[in-house]
Length: 97
Picture 1 (tube, rainbow, N blue to C red):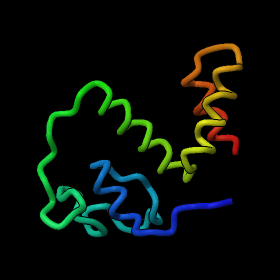
Picture 2 (cartoon, rainbow, N blue to C red; picture 1 turned 60 degrees about the horizontal axis):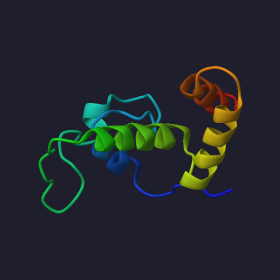
Picture 3 (tube, one colour; picture 1 turned 135 degrees about the vertical axis):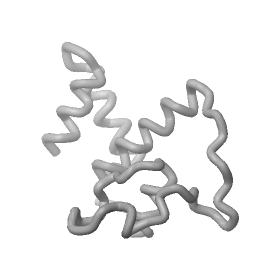
C-alpha cells in the first residue's frame, strides 16, 4: 500500500494547522513555519470559494489519516452505502482502519 513519504511540515503549512504528522514532542511553532505557505515566495492566502473550502477540508482529512485519493474514494462509497450520516460513517471507517 502506498503512502506519502515527502516533507510533512509542507503539508501542515499548506493546510494552516497542525496535522499531527510528526510526533507530539515539540509544539508546531518550533517545528514548522506555519504562517508561510509552501512555495518559493509563500503566496498570501486568498479568499476561498465554497468548493475550495470543501476541498481543503477533504485534503486535510486525507492527510491526517494518510490515505491516498483512490483509497479515500472507496471509503466514501462505503460510508455512503451505510445507513446514517455519511460524514460520520466516513470518519468512523477511517478511525477503524
